[in-house]
Amino acid sequence: MAEFRAQYDDIRALAADVAALSVDDAGHSEPVRALYRLQFPILCDPKAEVVKEWGLFKSEEKGGISQSAVFVIDSGLRVLLASLDTTLSRVRADGVVAYLRAAAAGQTAAPPERRLVIPTLKELSDTAFPALKLAFFPPPKR
Image (cartoon, rainbow, N blue to C red):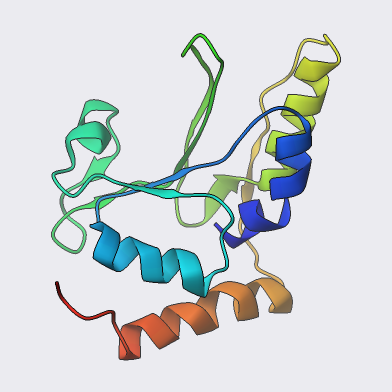
């Protein structure tokens, strides 16, 4: 999500938007959004209805989580791009920006490739350290 935060202005400049989807409730998602300084919303699906419908529910992990995925959906609600990602291989935000730029220019946009995730030190500091903070100081239960 931090990577999409860094590309957020470029995505918005291409008349697109970003939203995250989580099976957590707002009491858990909002502190995550604030901690990572995300400009976009985290949509909450605590009953996992949407993630199950979209085939993203992973019941075997932590009592049920949403699989990491990237979708580009047009204004007619057609899915133009769907990438079901893994922890180690995912579509990067810069690939989504390139895809959107090509589409905006009227070119046939090739779907961005999934790439091996090898975080830089900055990405580690932007993601791992806040995650550790949440692990040791979780938001209060509501």
